[in-house]
Image (cartoon, rainbow, N blue to C red; front, side):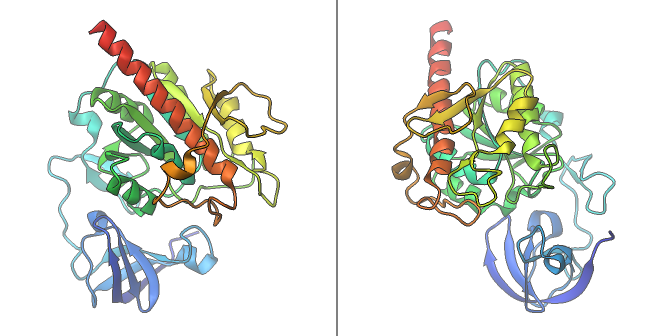
Length: 337
C-alpha cells in the first residue's frame, strides 16, 4: 500500500518535549520528531502521514509529520555522518553511528542485559536499578522512534536511565547503532552497569507465533550470550487477558525462550503462581515494586498497577535480578583489579 500523505497547516503546538513535539495540523492531532524533520511552528506548511489514523492502526490516533515545507527543507546531516538511517527508504538520512567512532568491548564480562518483550515492562524494570548506570537499547518490533516514549522521559527525569541507543531500524536515540550486538558492546565499554533492551511502544503483532515484535529480544539475548553477557528475560505475564493468549506466561515470552540458543535467566516474583508454565526461573522477592515505582508512569494495554499487578511484579523482578548481577559483577571486578 502506498504512503497516505496529506498537506496541511500547523494550527496548534500543544507540547514541546525536546525530541518530540505534539501538535495539530488542520485541527487533527500529530507528532513531530524535530531532530529528523526540523523545528515546527504554528502556521507552517507541512506534509503529514495520515495512514495509521485513517485505518485506525499503529500510531494511536495521531498523524506523523513527514516534512515541514516551511522550515524543514535543506537541513544538514549530522557532522561527519555518512551511514544512513532507514537506508534507501523515503525517510533515509545520514546519522553518526557509534560503531564508527566509539570503543566496543570484545567481551561483556557478565554485563546484565534485561530483555523486555513489551515497552510497558521498562519502567518497573528500571525502578529496581536505582543508583546504577543504565543504558536503554531500543530494538525493532514496536515504535521505531525512541523519542516517542513518555516512559523513557520519566525515567531519565528520575535518573533511572542515563542514555538511549536506537538499533536500526529504530532511530532518534541519543546514540545510533547498526546492531544490537554493537549496542551491547558499546554499553560494556562505556562502563554501564546494566543494559535494558526493549521494543518501542506499540508492539507489532500479526496474531501468529513467529510474527510479532517480541522476537527481537531473542536476538538480543543470543547476542548477549555470545558476547559473554548475562541475558535476563522480563517475563510478560497477565492475570487479566480477555483473549487468554497472554494469561499467565504470555506466548510472546514462551517463543522468545524457544528461540534462545542458550536459555537466559528467567526472573520470577516469589509467591506468584506460574500456572501451567514449569520452566526454570530465578525467584526473587519483588513485593516492593509499588513503592519502587511510586511517581513513575505504569500502564500496560490501558491497565494500571491495580488492574494487573502480576505484570508489573514480574517486570520488577527482572530488574532485581539484574541489580544483583551487577553487584556481583562489580565485586568480582574489584577482586581481580
